[in-house]
Image 1 (cartoon, rainbow, N blue to C red):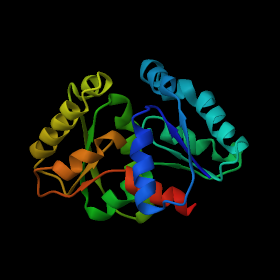
Image 2: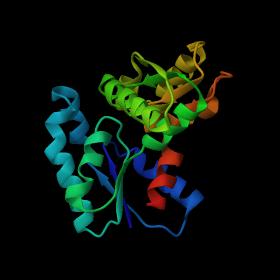
Image 3: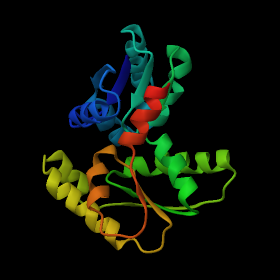
Length: 208
């Protein structure tokens, strides 16, 4: 069993659909802890480190053989909990970061939350160092996007992401920091490659 740690209920059907496409026989167990993102935004990710570790440990106690954390803000904390929990833990955006590094040196990160900027940039730089590549990372928050997402206006949210993608002109690859942004990659009006995290993250976690 693969456990998925989410901070939004919206990710549950997304990853169930992807599971049905790539490995329909696999069992997913969803843990939704929206309060973790809320508190991380208020007080910083470090404030929820112990709570994230408890959720990972709970997944292990329930029989999970691995955990995939789908939240970019707390993904680093989830990976740090792996040793104590005794099972592999993967943040969903790590395979995406590796793909971005392989695609080019100039990387633009688009995020809906400011709390994601530092963890995502740090992750890309970590994957670049692992690959022995030099990269230049620029990151920006799409103004108003998360307000629409929280209000349930997913179409409006994705429209803003698509507009932001079209405005990027000086990058080799564009990274969509939130897993919820993935549909915008398919709608993108840009010749620059766009990478998102759900599919690659799920495949990598299943391989664990």
